[in-house]
Image 1: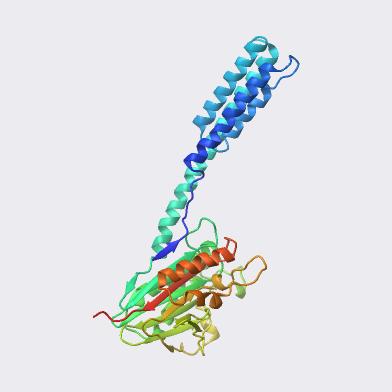
Image 2: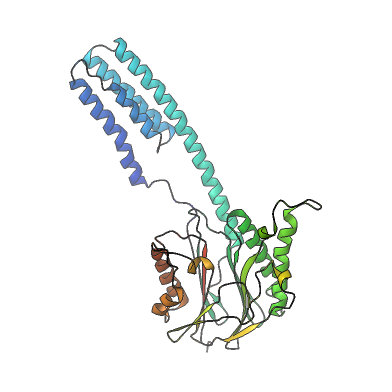
Length: 376
C-alpha cells in the first residue's frame, strides 16, 4: 500500500463549470429586462460588461467570446426597444462592450495557455517524483509493508522525506530519512541518498558499510554545488544533511538491526503497547560525518511475529493543532495497536490530518512493517 497526495486537482468539476456559466447568462438576462423596463433617463447597459469579464475568470476564450457576443446582442435589443440602435448613447455602449469582450477573450486565452503549461509541468513532475520515490513492496519475505507520504506543499507528491526497501539474500533492508530544507534542494539530496541505497543495499555487507555509502552520496551533493576553486556564498550552517534510519530485518531471526543517523526513533507495537526503540549511540545525520570519526554502531532489538514497526519522519511528530500542541504519536497509536500495517496507516493518516486541520507544516512519511508467521 502506498498512499500519496494527488499532484493535480482539476480547476472545477463539470457540474461546477455549468453552474458558473449560468452566472453571466443570468446577468445578461436580468440587465436586459430591467434596462428595457427602466425610465428613459436610466441606463443599465454598462453592467453587461461584467458578463464577459466574469466568464474570462473561469472559462476558455471561445466561451468568453460567445458570452461577449450574447452581451452585445442583448445591448442591441435594448437599443432597439428603447430608442434606436443608431442612438449615440447606445452606440457608445455597444462599442465599449465589443472592446471589453475582445480584451476579456484575450486574457482568457492567456489564462488557458498558462493553465495547460502548468498542467504539463505538474504531470512531468509527478512522473519524475514517482521515479525518485518508488512505492514500497506490499510483501518482502515474511514482512508486510505499508507506506504513506504526505507532502506539505499543496500540489507536490514528494518533498525532502524519503523511504526505500531492498531485498538481500538473508532479509530486507529499509531506509527512511528526511533531507534538510524544502523544495528542489531537498528533493535533490533525497534522490542522491535513495540512489546510493538502491545501488548498495542489496549487497551482502554490514550496516556500517551501507551507512558509509549513504554518507558518500550526501557528500557528492555538496561537492557538485560549487565549481572547483570557487568560494561558497553560504556559511557552514547551510551544509546539506539528511537524517536517516537504516534497518536490517532478517528473514529467520526475530530481531531488527538498525543504525540511527539523527532520526526520530522507530516505534514498536507489541500486544497493545508502544515501545520506542531508542538507540544508545545515535550518529549525526548523513552529511555531518566529520562530527564523529567512529564507525556506525548497530543496535539490535526484538522483532517477533505479530510485532509492527512504525517508521516516521519529524513532520509527523511536529504537526500542530490549533493550540500549537505537537501531535502525540505514541499516545494515538495505542488505539490501533492491533491493526495490520495498511489499516494502521489509514487510521493514522486520517487522524494526523484532522489534528493538523488538514495542513501539515512539513512533509510527513510513514512506513509500517509487520513480521508475519512463516508460511507452511
